[in-house]
Length: 554
Image (tube, rainbow, N blue to C red):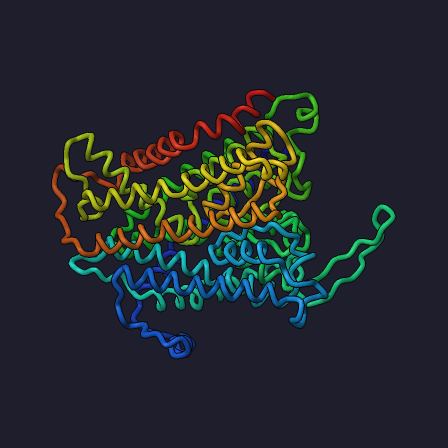
């Protein structure tokens, strides 16, 4: 069997598995967030934190809950790293320095999981399990909660209430993330991923010196790392490491975990707004972009010109031979089109155009299918923009799901889509203009610029993957990427929740003959076009200086 055929079969198997889980899992999540029942363990948690789960919140109160919870998470994780040197189970590692502690704390709380450190040489068992792994669960739950709040804004009318943050947070963690991640961890252990609390030990001699590895609760963290679209690896090599991702099957299984919640949330959306066809329209837009990018990535990596690459059968540099070009291409696109950031290959070693695809995937706003929750609310914002564009074309007040899209809704949506590009481009420009930051670049020219642009695009979009050619463990990059992650996560949430409150206050508008049918293929095509055109206009000059220049010159 040829490598291209094997790649197509992997892709078909992945799509089949996602299709089988789409309806039952999407319906289950809709039931979780629509139920008025509380599990006993959930009541214990509410009592412990002093929250009333039955009190409905308006959007400012919901936002205060998101920000307060996240601030406490950043503070706790920061202190945990600073105190690591005196904690048990630290494996002899010292406390993490202040700049890197800040960066890592912000990174994991914002669901970014950007790592400027070697995991197996920096973090002990306590920080890994009690700090990083916990944030993998709750940061994902926060993203889903905000998405569900926006869905309620579309579904409700004549009320400004969009749910209860504490209830949404706890239910998402207890009923969705914990049980499914536990099952996924068992599968990974059965397939060879490690799960222990062993110390550092030698595994043999390598080029005249000893090679050392430490164990850890790797499988359990790997499961939620992918299922919650987090991406932070236990080891520096991330999902290219055999302890995290030992076989081609686990590679495909991890891609499945990455995509399951973001795609299934479109079904949850359809069920909660009372029209599953609306969910299918959003799913079709997400699926078309994801499948198109996978096809483009495989084409650039399999068919790149040059005698060495043609003799090798493709661009194999930086890719694990266990997974090949096909598995690496699907993983790279899936991890950058979501907010996962995990890698099973080095994106810096992809072809010029292949690296550009990973960059563009993040620049789209990670909405195809996007992260846990962030993908759904991101593409719903784009749907509002698309409806507005359609309304301008026909001279009619735009409507979406029975709600009028007026000046307030468009302003909130427009600010949302401008925040992330502004953060990525401004921080990247500053890093290139100042005298010291360029010293962190491994390469010069277009590829070096791509490394810097990739870093801040990844941080601002809360992705977390890296081009693997930039030394980001400096005070400048630790601080600036930390700020990019912080603003890139919470500033958009402000406008998402404000939009949810505005929509929930409206009276429903009856559909007429002139209403745009947003469950039809025409709207899906309009939505895909709006996503690609708006992104292209925003980022094209930067892409032309980096991956496009490199790809055309090679």
